[in-house]
Structure formats: structure tokens, C-alpha cells
Image (cartoon, rainbow, N blue to C red; front, side, top):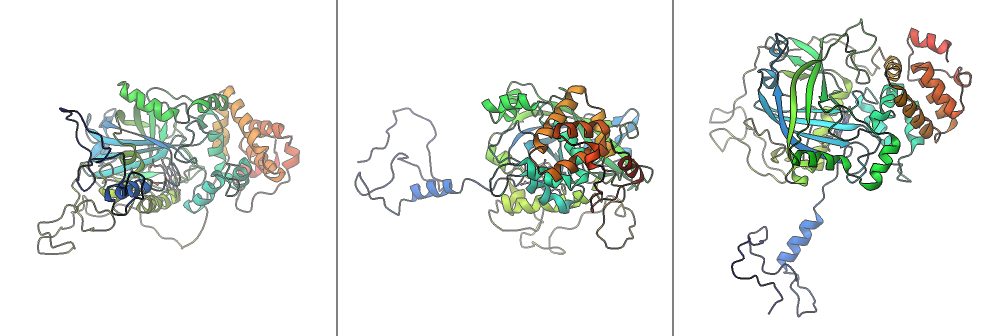
Length: 525
Ligand code: HEM
């Protein structure tokens, strides 16, 4: 005699089973000797349930742990004006006006853990997976258009400085500005991040950018450098520190909620995709390097051109399957799109699939949300933990190798005769990009802000930098004076530091100032 529930006649709801397909007759009581125990070890149903529960979590993303996912489509314009986009890229998703490609997008914050506040001052991740007929394309970007560093070897350092202190487990401004004060290339990002743009109002009203420089390749193998911009049709909205404090006082997940509810209401968020193109060379005429992700490309010289729009019209049906396990990477490109030599991009391209093999498992690409669902997948990769199915194979299931003349897979033909790309000659070295120019664009960004944005930026910087040691405070004022006189003077005023106090600081050992910067230094303030 057990206490199992007995359901009334005619209850035709589906019956609970174990994963082995056994019906569960009692989900309230484990098997025990007598009503008061002890429990027995052959209690398969109970052990299965608890041991699966014990394994419900996988490691959260090392960065961008908190995020929201939606699905939708990309619709191409096929041309700008009279000019076909196919002149610049042979990527099929851009080729015809009206052509639609399925996509998944994940918006995220960067530094906090999986349950952290979505009103934090933090860059926002903006990662799009296009399920094209030629396989998947991932465009993994952010909302600010630039980044803190330009060489992937510094990524663990910049993230450690922004993550919680390893002793107190608090995000400490003193640590952040200790690192940034020694990293002049971060100034452009800091001017963005500590302005209102650093706290987008929600995920629907923010821009997105590819940030790194990629290449487009046309049918003749001609390449162009390209940068991507996503522009929300709903406009851009940001929060001040005070607005954000109120929102996160009531809800840590307001942005996920806003996105989910808008899609449920049928108000489908939209973004235009625009690209900037440059011929594929070093562009010595520019005062920055086109492969430097701390720089934007001036829009008057490189006008953005619209190549399509994205519409989000479906929410996830399960958070874990479609958000936690969703895996993006900068190496995931299709024919017609290529890498540039951007030193961040190559580092990122290693890092994403490396972490996903650890975080999700070696067969993460067999999961439905990561599969190239609109292309044929046929590989000779087999086995490993959690193999979900055998990938598509040739006619002969015994052949899981290549080459073979007994029914295996063959290599695809190249779309053009040769691989595209420049001839490169150079000495193996470790060197900075020659045109660092770390201050001009940061200063211009400040000059373009409205007065309230300038005030908010200065207020935020003063509050946080004041927690750092005096040497760090002085160096930050020195950097901001080199960006823009007014910005440096105002941050200095807030910290009680004048141009005279920092005039004699030597440049950092890690930087080489150009002539214009040396001139500004000589006349600081
Ligand atoms: C996520 C590494 C720079 C945007 C991640 C993850 C890693 C990583 C390991 C976690 C991925 C996962 O667990 O699935 C790096 C490295 C970088 C770098 C090594 C520099 C060398 C950047 C930059 C951007 C960016 C410059 C913006 C343009 C993102 C986004 C995600 C992410 C959007 C979240 C993807 C998602 O939603 O799953 N990055 N990252 N990262 N990164 Fe980066």
C-alpha cells in the first residue's frame, strides 16, 4: 500500500516517465523500508532524478554570462542605390532583394554573473547567428563600436581588471583604473562606457557593431575591408546612473523582460544592417590603422550603406537549450566573408570554440540551436561526450575518413580558382600597430556629446576614479587632457588635480606619442 495519488477516471493528461521510458507511479515518496525509512539504494527513479538535478548547471560563460535570446530573420536589400551588393561580396545572404535568412540573436552584459543586473554600466554583447544555406555565420559584436584593447593577448588582463576583486569579490574601480591608466588605447572605450551609452535603456533600443574589421570577397576574389553596424529602428535610449539605480532596485532582469514581452505582444524589434567598406590595404593616409578595433571609421569618408534589416519575432522555448547552450564564434564565416589580420579577431577566433568545448562540450555543434540547420552537414568527426547523432556521411557508413574511393565524402570545389588575399612578407616579431593615435577619436567622441551626456560622463569618471590611488588619478587626468582640454580639465577639477600637476609625467613606457600628441603634451591644458 503506497500514498501515490490516484487520478480520477477520464484524466487524459500525459503520464510522467523516467528517461528510460518507465511510467512514474509515485513522484511524491521515495522507496523506504517502512513509512519512516531507511531508504534503499536500488531506488533507481529517485537516484536518476536527483543525480540529473545535481548536474543541471554547466559553467556559465566566462564573460557575457547574462543574456537574452530571440529568433527572427534577416532580409537583404540586394543593392544600395543602383549598385548590386554582389559587386563587393559573393555571400549569398546579401545577394537578392527580399531574400530572408533565419537568425538567432543573443544580447548580453559582459562582466556580471548569470543572475546579475541588466542595468549595470557595462558594454552590451550583440551576437547574431545567421543560419544561411552555406552554413552558419556568426557576427559577434557589441553596442559601443570599439573595444578596450587592440591585441588579444591583453584580453584576460582587461577582463580580470573589470571582474570582481579576487579577494573581496567586489568590482573595484581602483583596480579598473589601475589597469586602464596603463592602457592608453582604452580611452576611446572609456569615454563611451562612462557616458550614458554605457547603460542602454534596454536591448531593443541599442545599436550593435561588429567592432572588429572583417573582409568581403566578391566572385572575382577581390577583397574589401568591412565594418558592420546595426541601427535600431526604435531609436537609441540610454539610462543615467540614477535611472539605472531605480530600475535595478526593483528588477535585475528588466532588459530580458522587456524584449520577451515586446515579442509576445507582437511588437517585433527591428534593426537595419549597414556596412562601411574600405579597399583592402593599409591606408597610410589615415591617422589610424583600419585593423585597430579601438577606432571607428569616419562616416563622412566611409559612408555606411544599408544591406538589410533584422526582425525578431520569436522567443526561446527553453532558456537552457536555446540561450545557455547557444554558442557563437568569430571564426564562423560563410563564403564571401573573411577574416582580416585584426590582432583581436584572430585571438577571439581561437577563444570562442575553445571555451565552448569546455563549457558546453565537444559536440556542442550537434545541439539544435547551434546546428547549421539550413545547410547540409557532412563530416568525418565522430564520437566524444554526448554525441547526439552521426553527422551526415557519404554513401558508405564504414568510411569515416577522407580521401577514399569507396563511398566517402569528397572535398568541395573552390568557388574561385585561388584563395584570395595579399602576399605577406615580414619578420616574425612582437610589435604594436604603428599608428596608435589613442586620443584623437576619444576627444572627438566627447566633443560630439550633448551637454547632459558630457556632464554625466565627467560625474561618473570623477566618482569612480576618486577611489584609485593618487598616481592612477593623475595618470587618468593626463590621458584625458591629451584627449580633450575640457574633458581633462573637468575630470581634473573633480579630483583636485590640475594640468600643472601632471604636465611633467613622462609618456608610458608602453606608448610612443606621435608628433601631434607630443605637441599637445608640451602645451597641456
Ligand atoms: C563572449 C572571448 C573580445 C563580444 C565571449 C566568450 C569568450 C570571449 C571566451 C564566452 C563565449 C561562450 O562561453 O560561449 C573574447 C576574447 C576577446 C573578446 C578572447 C578578445 C581577444 C570581444 C569583443 C567583442 C566581444 C571585442 C565585441 C565586439 C562578445 C560577445 C559574447 C562574447 C557578444 C557573448 C556571446 C554570446 O552571447 O554567447 N568572448 N572576447 N568579445 N564576446 Fe568576446
